[in-house]
Image (cartoon, rainbow over all chains, first blue to last red; front, side, top):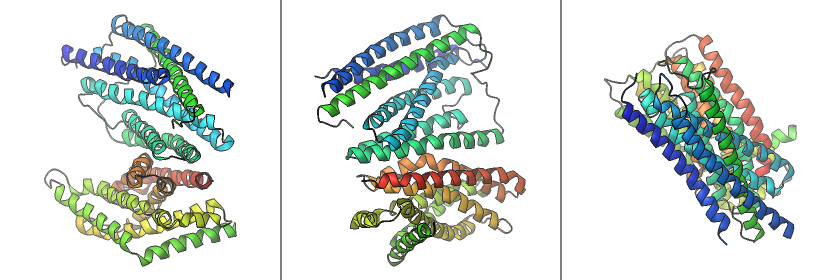
Length: 37
Length: 231
Length: 226
């Protein structure tokens, strides 16, 4: 059922990048709000 | 008064520390999952999305339960801290369900050749997302703090009771309709290398959840102490 | 208990009588239902999708959309005339108030459905002989479910600025179990399946109603607190 290994890797990377962006981004938002003095 | 603001500041500090630890842990999990965990035979590389998707689901569900429980407690005890806690959990839950909602289709596409299927899990993800969204929208639209707290609490409780019904109806709907054989990624017998990555990821996500909630709670507490209601 | 019911029925009756005098909301809900039915009929590619396949979903989309429209106006009257405060001043149980509102909304939505159903039969050419009681039972069970929750949200959103947007957003997840169940039952009824197949779904619908009507009765007072 393996279609295209390169494309598959693409989805994997995309998912990890998106996760990092969302979680990291939210952390950033919180840090900015916490330290805005 | 001073005790409260010290408490808030302490929460903010420790919340940020925990979040930082969580983020470092997340990077470690990424490395572990991508480099040091075997590739699954049937689904290939995309299966590894499992290690970021499933813990997000766990965190979202946990947040949701916390919102429900603190909503019940709030209506009973009317302590504004419970409302603030529910609000923080709902905000954090929205973030995790966003991760679910984005990684889910990215996983589905290479494996099942479609971005979306109305199977029990993905539909459930969508509903959870809408419930969190609705909760935030409702809070945003209400000015009076007491009203906001009470109305969100009612929504939180109704939502918590709804979830098993949605799961049940969608599950029944799917099992009655012949579906192509879909490989269940969370098979009961997971090889150790995969299991340990999953467990580590679950732990990291939990740390992140706690860190997020603490920081947000602390920020809101500090803001309300300073007179401006951060909602 | 009797007093509780009396208050509820009084509230419901008052609500319906006001509605009766200004029939605009009822007419627009029915017109909307007719519009949806007509559009679906024309939008469908007759070669690809049969009427039978589409019918249950279309019927329930019509019912639930019109239902939400009906719910929107549920507390709008009170908001405009600050009549809610007057209601709350009366020494009556808040839950009784809810029951009254709920019953009035139910009557309203049932009326819309009663008009939409013949239109549906007309446009989709379905044969309801023999299954009409089943259809009516399903409609009652599913509608009760989403009107119960919808009434609570209508009370909430009437205090917000974008009530017409907030209400559908909030109510959407709660529409799923009743509507999915209703579509399942309707599809099976239209296909002539035996009762044994639908009993399970009907039980779920009934259980949903039981749980949520009770929950809403209990939670509504919290919305009216001062």
